[in-house]
Length: 279
Image 1 (tube, rainbow, N blue to C red):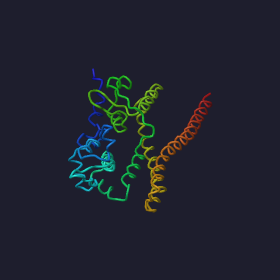
Image 2: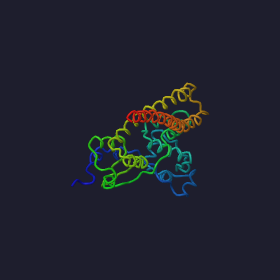
Image 3: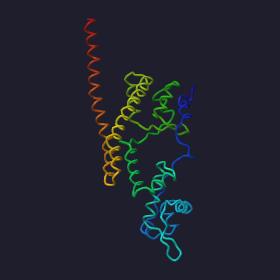
Image 4: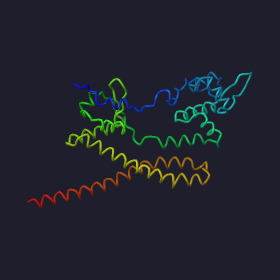
């Protein structure tokens, strides 16, 4: 008898998680409240504890010009809240995938450019309405969906419907989509057919998403660039990104409802007509 995880082995081999050696640095935990209160009078050791960074890295940032020099009193350097904010910004930019060379270019630009670009990036990458992922075992997946052939396994991997975690455990990023798949199967539609449709819909969604993205770039970002990226319009730009995504989602859903109704009416009108002719 086949092991419960057999049809998932190919997914596991194709795992797309980034290796730990290439992972983006994570934001360090906040320091004790006492250090935060004294953030305008920190030694380099206290600064390191405050932001969760090594003293050596802080000094390297000094050398690269990423961090302003401290105030020196009695031959001891003291750091302020400005230094804390700058180091946290560097950590945030690193966590977003920027290397130190790129960060150096950003920080040497106009005042606040790095913070503004980071704010724009967060607005762009924040999920619409994030779901809490579901953790399941291989046994549970096999019980719910049965075995899949190699082609369907590849579809599952490519669509990231199930992500292997090792030790027979799997993450389901969208439990709602998983539940929809089960309900489709309950109607008598095979999972193979449903996955093929999901793959096609995914391609169409890519095309629609590109269209809305090009709209934003053409109508909002490019005029902003032509105007010289005025400081007072950065907040407006980020708000436009925040507004565009739900507007695009609502417009797409409204159009889909209209088109789906039309298609069903046409299709079942023909079915009824055909049935009438058979009598």
